Image 1 (cartoon, one colour):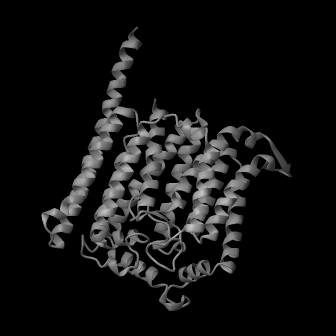
Image 2 (spheres, rainbow, N blue to C red):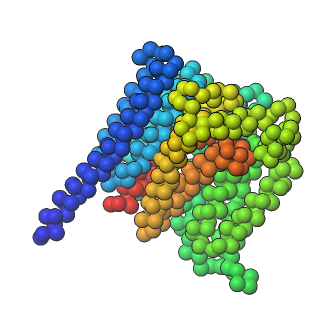
Length: 437
């Protein structure tokens, strides 16, 4: 009898504690975004009307927090503040770097928050995702196929045609397919992970999964990668490869998969370097951006990124004091360099920390959901997706890896990327509710 009386009280206490922690972090994030925008308004001598991004952000944060209090009372209290901090900072940056596109980014933030809110009203066990795995993947393949046939590039006439447009609104299907592939892999591995671990054949001491088990998964994954390579969307193809191999390793626990993945990746890079001019160009730029191996000064983007990062030093040039607009496509591909220039090392740390929070808390959800394999694989896959994408773009900006053209989750300009990041974060929120329940 005592337990039944105490448990509801403890439940209320835990719920209020979660709400208080999340609310406190949201207030701190809001103060940062407010002060950031005030600094930009003062430096650029704008009117008070230029404070509208803060109002948009505050409305989204309050609305999402209130719905989450109702629908996900036991959620992880760190995920939402980290997501919204990055999105708000991104809105500040777009308003500073490309003011004419700031309203589009604001619409994308609002739409993404509305979509996440809608997800919270769907069954939280996410069985609606698991049951229709082939439907979701076939939908993704159809979208990729449509991009090959009817794809456009709204920004550059000669660039890769990776977008589909309807009534002047453009969406990049490969962003959605990242989510759909993760759902498919999580669902497939949930049904077959026992087989993967125990139905193996041996070559000496090496244990390998049954080819019959791997064939459907390899086929679906291979088709996606081939289509992406055909479209020259090599950054997304790399993300697909890493998601696939790491999720396969998590399901099997066999180190040989990681070794095989490394060998396959190196081999694929060698073949791609010899086959695709765009890969050869990016590798040459990466190896020697100052040496002139890239024709027509095409290393200019990376060189300017490195100069921007170096000029930021520890404390940065100051809000609105740098010249990141010298970097081509800085608002999308190299927004990390813009932050490093004006905020310095402190800003870089401030950017990396919330990204790490999202990835690590997502992996924590996966660890706590081991009794529910689908939730565990989903949380792990989504965390890997966001983590690898962040590493690729930050590493490219610092010349640690070749530039791949992927965007920085939650921060870079682009409705497709922003929506995908928010949906991934929203699913992690829902999964965290289930893991704590």
